[in-house]
Image 1 (spheres, rainbow, N blue to C red):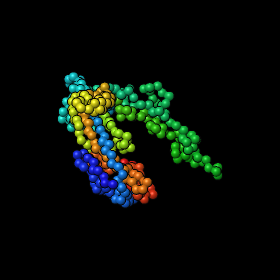
Image 2 (image 1 turned 90 degrees about the vertical axis):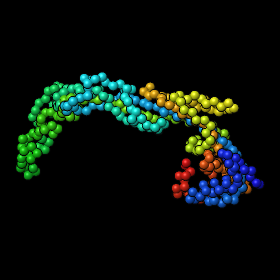
Image 3 (image 1 turned 45 degrees about the vertical axis):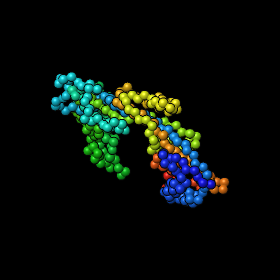
Image 4 (image 1 turned 30 degrees about the vertical axis):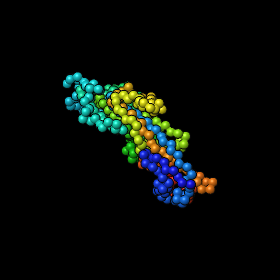
Length: 337
């Protein structure tokens, strides 16, 4: 039976073109044969175009964090040099990215926000009492030259041998005690927080993030419901509307209640905007993606595949009658896409 050509994105798809697309698709699978694509009858061709709606929200988010490091002296950029700049007073025009960039982050020092304070870990002393030999001391107090029992001779200073003789313990030189292994019996350890300086410098840092949040919707008929939405989102279609504003409203189509409702649903699913961010602009698009389902038959066997988008991408996932793969070759990776 002759196949009536179908309109595909303004072009006609005839039987020859349909077979060529399938043969090319099969040819990229190392264990698929081309006989069904060449010889099976085209049983049915169905147009099942899909509508794709997107809302892209481009925003800027700013948050303030504090960074602390040991202070070893020198000038500080504090409030004595002028008022501290506010988070949203920062001029970032030189670092502003292109609109709708997926993500960009930068860090900026807040001018005149630096402060110096006494280290709380050591109360400004730069050292802390050794937790091994001065564990029972009050904060701020310590004892030097605290010794511990030699573990080799158990404090005897001598090592007993089986023949009854004794020798001087070499671990403690016969003293029976050894210096504290943690601090060398100094009684103090350098504070790890301030590295011994006794002071900490705190600086405010602004973290600025530009990102695009996307809302995507697909309106698909039951005929094309087996195709994953990702296939339609990346396919090239015919754009029906493309609007940009600080906050987009639903598109209006004078002759289509369906498209008006579809656009409204996309806008209604606008992503949540964090309180630390503001929306710079939005872009709303609706496209129609041409989709054709082709069913091929031989005797009582059938299989179907889809031709998607203006680029005519073939999607065939569930069944193809001439597959010879036993699960040991890379062609299975193609099936996952």
